[in-house]
Length: 231
Image (cartoon, rainbow, N blue to C red):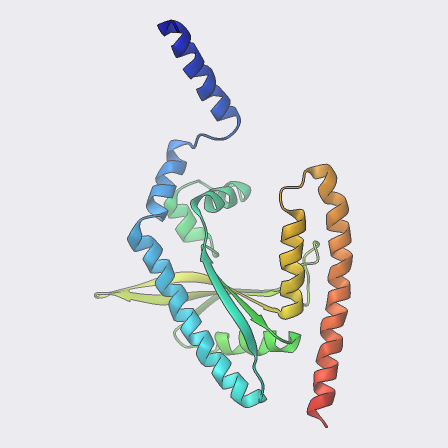
């Protein structure tokens, strides 16, 4: 292939990559590089470890008080650079590492799944009593579900991570939901993932309706548990 033709082909490929959004901008590359640095990743991991250890204590305490297991399971994750970039763009914010760390509350996230819907508030209340946790924000999507039907309580806590003589407050989003709410959320994500605009509207309408059905089941199971406890 002639040299000029080779250059033209390479240029066409580069243009196509840019059009398809496959090439990141320099500021996006810099954000990704900084976010993936070991000290940054380990600092977020340390914050999540601290919160999960506290949640295990909370579970032990509430289990003893209630005479039954309260937390079913926990999971955690650190947002990928691509997810962070996408969220900053969605919110119309500057795409930079500093902006992400200072303004995003959910780079580190923990999901807590409990058996019954009233346990959500028990757990949230105890989290808010922790003296070393700085409660930044709380969103109640149980009393006020999202339009999609999503239900959960989100507690944003600033937790202290100590290294040498420095204490850094790192924000962790703690999502607390019932087993039934988690079941709906997981299936909703699976069914709506990568559907185009035409397909998604019908799916979302259906899943919204099922959210109401599952909420009713959640409340019925709570009523049944209370009846059993009174026997």
